[in-house]
Length: 212
Image 1 (tube, rainbow, N blue to C red):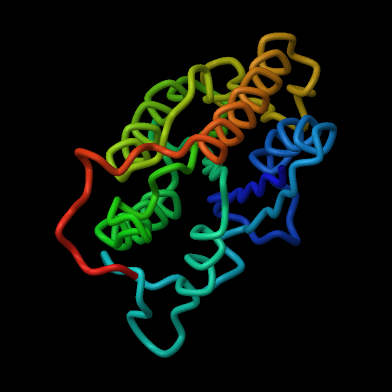
Image 2 (image 1 turned 180 degrees about the vertical axis):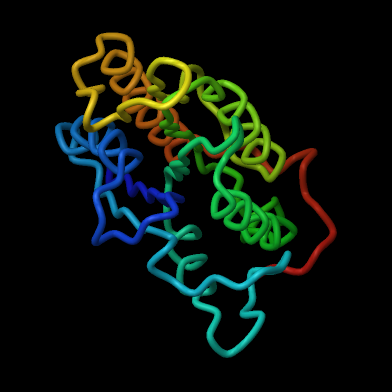
């Protein structure tokens, strides 16, 4: 059974720059690789993503529709976000808004389009806020129709105040973070396989909107 995972890294940096969020995402992907999950990482800052609550292009330069197609094809979706002032990044918020813009679309059974997909979150920072960001992102995904398995938030934060971030502080050596990266990966894979073999029944959750 082939499982496809898509990671949307919502760092404020381009993919050409070192990213602490990307480094922690890599720790999760290591376990995906071991279990032959096909993974693609997209750094949102590399693309022109317009503002709006829609899955369609908001202007001629908007590249979101191409990303949205990959979301539709994925069994697993992970959002990665750094913490700024205790909150998720502005790009994370924009991506969630665009995901929400497609949430009223339906699958071939008439269910919301994100049904039978699982979601998770990766968060990095150098002070508190990881659980707050995780709660916000995971609720958003759940509200849109994603299934949220247990313990699918992986995070790393250093001491409060200015200081080294994940890469410089060698956060990848942190036992708690490493353990949760593994738990997250395996729980996402398990639920993705389970939902692919046994999709959520249509009875009771068919919605009256047009199919995509």
